Length: 166
Picture: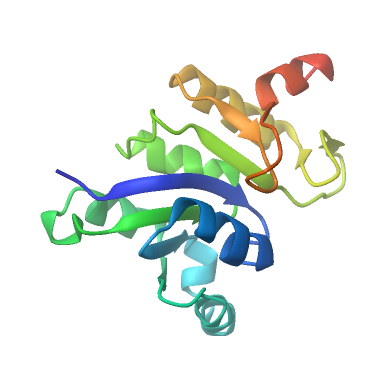
């Protein structure tokens, strides 16, 4: 047995109001795992994220490698996880590292805009690396979709990429 992942979400804002309230209420995790190498090494960001935890839910900020390692460790089987990554590339590393989210797919809440990126929605910007990672996740048989909050309908990101010629 392994830990139970209830939601696999990519959100460049990581743990914020929508995640701490709406998503946590919807999926009812006992643990939020924020998986980011850069945040795990940044004491200030790590502290701010753990302080944003909803009542009764523990938050840990860990590296990609640590997440892959603990996923298969029976010591963590009691975890019911809301999994958050900052980038689609980190989510792909987790999947390639053996984390099974085939029953869930990947929810993309937001991807921050930078120069030379294309806006797919008002909150999701993609460049070449993001497009490649989204397509790689889909090649792993995963549904990759945009859904800001639980009440929103899911929008297929592969269809959005195709529509935008990406």
